[in-house]
Structures are given as structure tokens and as C-alpha cells.
Image (cartoon, rainbow, N blue to C red; front, side):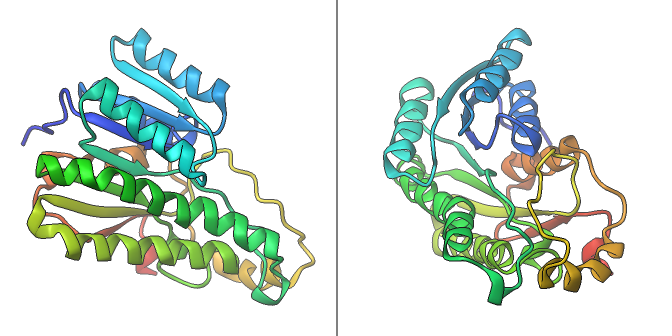
Length: 253
């Protein structure tokens, strides 16, 4: 089945690097028009340039997606440039410090929840009126193995990704009769360059250490991107509310 993505308007967050950038490039190769949203202006501009050099169409919007004004700019730009939003990929995210709950500071908790869960909520809420008016839309969230288990990250990150899973499933139920699909990938270890600022001697990293032997082979961002594009495409037209592990079988261990 054809992807049906040619000419579609796509928003990808965290698209300046890692999984987001790989997804933005993959969508562009399918003929989609891509809005690259990222906190890093240089990285966002580089992604847009790479897409345009390959003959694709892209535009960048930079800023903190936890801020409503930035969310509004992202959606308004996509609607103005593309005529609407056909696909939203909530991919931007940050790691915590692998902190056990008793060691999580207010700052760590609030930052991780804001970036990983509140920002997807704000963006999804902003694009839904446009998708509902069009009678169709696909939302793909980047969850994590930490959204499926308690042994893959610290308390803040684990809570945020469990929240993403719940948000995805609730969206699927609420809007399935109005042409909207919501799914998520749950990446395992992926080569993205994200650094984890942790204290090896802290309780959290020490408690989690024995479980990381189950991670298995680390994936490339392009492997995660392929799953995102599939879930956004017409090939997945009857897939809704699914959380797809892309983890070399870690979720099965």
C-alpha cells in the first residue's frame, strides 16, 4: 500500500537531531512537507537545508515547546505554509538523571514532565481543531521502553513516558470515529547522542544497572523513524491506539 504522504503537511518536534531529524528526512523522501520544530535554531536550520537540498519542502520553527506561544507559532506556520496539519509527530524529549523518586528535585521533575508530556499535550490540543475540520489526521508520539516498564529510567522520565502512553490511548478512543488516529513508538536503546547527567553513586543508577543487560542491540535513529512514518501513513490506516516497541525485543524479555 502506498504511504499516502505525498503533499501532506507534517509537524515533527525535536527534528533537529536524532530520531526527529531522521523522521523529518524520511517524511520528506515520501513527498511530505515538513515543519521542523526544535529548541536549537542551528540544528533546525540544518535539517531544513538538508531536506531542501534533496528537493523537499521544509520550514523551521524554533523555541521551547512547553510554551504556549511557541506551540501557537508552530501550528500557525504549518497551517499557513501547508494549508493544514495532516500529521503531528510529538518526538521532542529529554532524559532525567535516572533519579530514584526520593532523590528527584522539583526542578528535575518539572522540566522532564514539561518537555516530555506537557508539550505533546499542548501541541496535540492545538492541532486537533484543524484535523477535526479536515476529518482526518495522524498523531505519532515517541514514548519509550520506560513507558512500558519501571526499570528503564528514573522516576521523572518513567512517569512522563507512561503519561505519553496514556495520552496516546485516550486520544485513540476519543477521536477514532472522527478520522483521527493516535499511536506511539516505544524505542529501546537508540544512538541519538542524548547525554544522561547522572551520579553513578546515587541510588537510582545503582538500582537500575542490573536491568540494562536486557537492552540488547542499540538501534539507529533511522530504524525508529521508519516506524514513525509507517504509523503516520495510509499503510497503518486501521492501527489506532497502538504502542509499538522498536527495541530489538527488549519489551519481550
